Length: 119
Ligand SMILES: [Cu+2]
Image 1 (tube, helix red, strand yellow):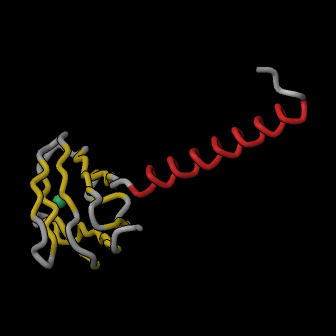
Image 2: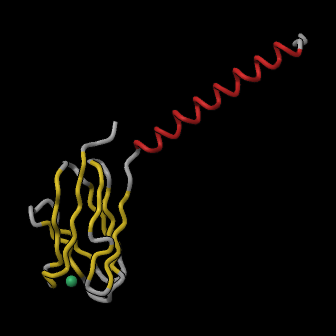
């Protein structure tokens, strides 16, 4: 079967539109996936100290210091042990603002604002 130029062009436009729609669908699927928020622990500080996440996301702390530092939520949502040069993760299960600190250094603080899951 041979397409006349006009029909071939119409078919090309349809395919291009279909590909564009598929790309948008794929992109939003990726954006809705759980994310991992990385926080560095270095020189007596959580960095970044303020963060925003969504229910279902993970927080991953990477302790670059040479001693262990716990990340303890003030509301008892989590109490994560961070050995030196190790990472540890926690899954965010509910929305809300969580303040946390290092039990060894109460001035070492951080806040994570957990929003409802994206739709
Ligand atoms: Cu500390």
